[in-house]
Length: 176
Image (cartoon, rainbow, N blue to C red):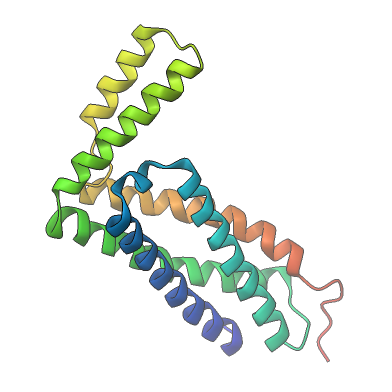
C-alpha cells in the first residue's frame, strides 16, 4: 500500500474517531435528546462528509494531483475502519459502564419523537402502538447492538466513500 494513502487514512481515521467522541461528549453534556434528533444526525453526517472531502483533497494533493478511484476509496475506507470503531468503543463505554441510565432517557425521547412524527403523518393508532412496543423491546445502546451498528455505519460510509472517490479521482491516472 502506498505510504501516503496509509498515512492519510490512519491520520484521518483518528481525526474522525476523535471528532465522533467529541460530538458524543458534547451531545451528552448539552442534552441527551440530541441523540434522538434527526437534525443533529444530519449535521454529523454532513461533518463526516466534509472530513472525507478534506481527506481526499489532501491525499490527491500529496499524490501530486493524480489519484485513482481505488487510491481514493482505499484511503477513505482505511479512515472509516479506524474512526468508526473508536466512536463505537466510546459509546459502549459511555452508555454501558459510565452512565447506563442515559440509554433510557434517549429511548424515551426517541419513542416520543417517533410517535409525534407518526401522528403528524396520520398513521393509525394500532400501527403506532405496534411500533412503540417494538421500540420498547429494543436497546440500541447495548454492546451487541452498538457492535452490530458498526457494520451498518461502515456500509453507509463505504457508499459515501465510493461517491467521493469517484468525484476526486483524476481524469488522467498516468503517473509520471
